[in-house]
Image (cartoon, rainbow, N blue to C red; front, side, top):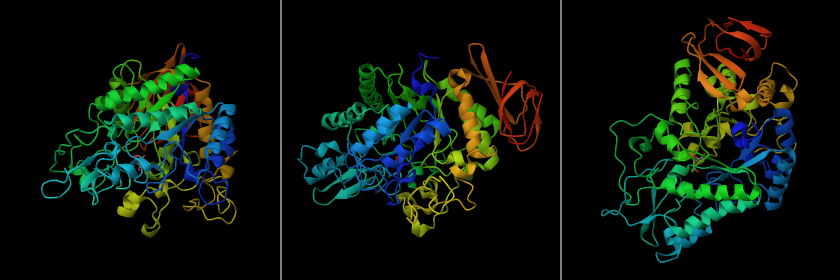
Length: 534
Ligand code: GLC
């Protein structure tokens, strides 16, 4: 257990910095705000690592995922001193710090792009992907941006198009250019020197495309896979605009920067790549054949789906089977791009899902606010801030990015009294906040605290093997975690009706607070989940 790197046993907590804690009363969260809440994260909640979404200089067209200086802090969030204070506080409290790295695209206001755009013979021209118009003057190929519309923007002054997989104000970096590559790798080294423990890597599989810029194949029927965007994006097979095999050598170079920092500091470094792929073998290839690429490709399998026992079991078994030797899984239920957990699953099913998240083999990520069951905000179209929501209201992501609710005051304790937060507070009954739930044994927060505390004392849950338990009713997904002689069994009744299971042991935790003591062939209520020591 002592030999395992921290990221195997850790529980990660994702912070959207605009929305966690506002220390200076401008209605937007900041780094000093996060620093002031480290004790909450460590002592009250009991998590081990935080991942902070981007806080770098940015025009905020995509709220920080459009970076104009990879080694700066946007004044909205503080400055490098505020960052250093955050690092120091995390160190003091033994909390690991993961930051977000956006390798696929910068902001169009990044000085690199400003230079690149200035003329065809600028030395940085090739730091981005420029191409001549098609013979008819249109875009160079049929690629579509994730946020809709062609992935190409025409630049009048130089007569070429540049590539942008997201917004036109997010031009894609050209990782095939050595100068760009080394400048970007330097940004990793910069933050490692400043003391970060790892990186979440934004849409990193997009970073390598077909060098010939070939068209994507067109489907007759739009694909319904991860996030059906309902736009032209789904009509293409994304064979050429992302995930080119050259991504693997690139990731090995990225990994070598982390490995070097690990050797120098004597402290494990970590990478979690945002890889939107549901083909397990392709997904698993991002670990690298010798576990020499990403420490983990982020696993989206449980973000959307029918929540049946068979589906859940298949997900886990397929993932386990696809993992390269020695690779470590991870699980996630929600993030800043998905509707709130309780909105997607409902209250009871979300409790079952959380118990599953924190007991499966792998590193779990929790999204801020889910620990108090924060609700999805209904943002009217005219108030949408998210560029996606401004294009297609249903795809807007503001509803899951509202300020963290610390107490039941009108500002939820997020900002100074009387200040209007950047997005509304969503606590209609005053119950979805930390103050209201702390010390209430039936609250969602107490449920998380209990699960996290149990996990922390259990090597089986943190590092144990996974084994499916097969002899259970159809509606039940059950598994065994074991580490040496220590064993925990988990039974999830994913159906709505009660079921009997054959199991015996002492109860560790149940989604039903009323259950306690010894368990012997229990009847699980609809959507009840239990963990026992057999
Ligand atoms: C990732 C981020 C998302 C962002 C996009 C473009 O998917 O999670 O929030 O909009 O990349 O950077």
